[in-house]
Image 1 (cartoon, rainbow, N blue to C red):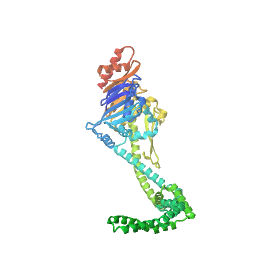
Image 2 (image 1 turned 180 degrees about the vertical axis):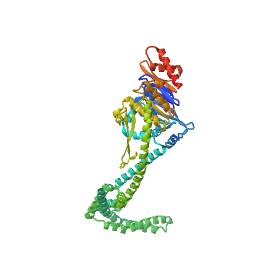
Image 3 (image 1 turned 90 degrees about the vertical axis):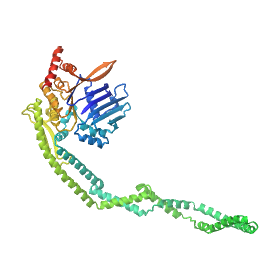
Image 4 (image 1 turned 60 degrees about the vertical axis):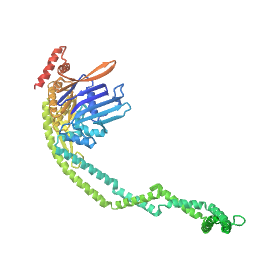
Amino acid sequence: MLQELYIKNYIIFDEARVNFTEGFNVITGETGSGKSVIIDAINILCGGKLSKDDIKTGASNALIQGLFIMDDDNSEIEEKLIEIGITPEEDKSILIQREVNLSGKSFCRINGQTITFTMLKTIAPLLMDIVTQNEHQILFKSSMHIKLLDNFGSNDFINKLNEISQLVNDIKNMEGKLHDLYGTSQERERKLDLLKYQIDEIENANLHPDEYDKLISRKNILNNSEKLYNYISEIYKDLFQDYINNKSVLDVIGNCLELVENICEIDESLIAYRDSIADIYYKLEDLKIPLRQYRDNIEFDSGEIQAIEERLDLIDKLKRKYGNTINKILEYKAEAVREYEELKNSENIIKEYEEKIELMKKKYNEIAFYISNMRYRLAKMLENAVEKELRDLNMVGAKFFVNVKTDKDRISKDGFDIVEFMLSANPGEPEKPLIKVASGGEVSRVMLAIKSVLSKFQKHESIIFDEIDAGIGGHTANVVGEKLRNISKNMQTICITHLPQIACLADNHICVRKHIEDNNTYSEVINLEDDERINEIAKMIAIGDDSSFSINMARELIYGKKAL
């Protein structure tokens, strides 16, 4: 249940702390005082939108904080907390915080740990059910009726719904994968032709991984062959033919070697010089033949240059189509071969996929039949239960119908069925969709009747009714109050109301008051006790100028009702 709500710098609230209790909590106050702002704040804690526009004028940020206390037997909430990485507190408390600053940056925390809004929305539906006037529009949307009916089901029924939902996901994923992989037969043939062309194109190119760099190097050599020949010839001539006075460098070094050998006998320290000169001489002599061969093998072949350029153009074309390196091109070819072979054998694979899909659809049909049969039973039970509630709500003679239509070819997470709520508001009138027969007050009562029935089955910790009493009064208001009080026996109930007949039943009466100071509007929240509560309900009654009459009536409503 929601134990405490803290609001700071939100809309018209500077700072407010609202204390809630178990049972029936009622919020009252004049129109525009900020009652619905409190509900909006609670809705934000449950994943609603919080923007910088909600920050009170003059403040730098808005903060909304709610302290929830879980029931001891609500293990589902604890499981959800663990799923999102939050360790449940030993005292079963859950502190949810939402904050936004003027830059628009917002924060969401549970028990001090930052979480995403998606995480919050997995927790919020288990904590709170918020029924606003706008939610009455759900009754005008037939697509939502099946959800309301299903809430009436047992745990086994809900488990079957979860099972069929997962099964439909699996079927759609398998069908999507089959289409993505193979498409239609025509698409498969076109893809086979394309893959075959690509494989042949790469295969016919006969590529080698290091070929491109070698071709570039060879092309550079051929383009500079004349320069290479001239330079190598000059080097060869200097080293081995004519360097100075018809002597080559090799001749000069050989002469130096001969001279130093002649004087080594005189000074043995010259032997080291002789050896160094000898080493240079023999190395240079070893270079003579290879250098001459390199020179003689230099070619001026323009035909080879053209062939290399054509080869490079081919490789560049393939690189643009299949990958920016030869290795990438070859990898593309390997993948194309794999896909081609898979497509060639696709009939077997398609058959395997289709058999799996068929098995899943068979399982779907079994579960969908079970769910459909259960829905027909639930529909009758819900019809009877809602009609009883409607009679109590002064809609005597009204008939509530749950129209379940079955389409056995339908594959949906909801199964075969399409559900629509129908109403005959008065005896003798045919049943019609709610939007065509129900007034605003009747819609409120139908919604209350449904919620009253479902409150025994739903797993929410708390439920909020935002002015569900709109359009009703008199004896019906008394009955609505009793219905709300009965709901509060199963879960914490919070209700905004303008009716004293409902407010007098509260276990906890919260009053919202607005006042103006220095041309600024402020709202405050007060938990009323005893005389304060009598005075507040007397204001709601406000019959004539005799305040004592209203006070006495308020006292009678409170203590008379309490005695019931």
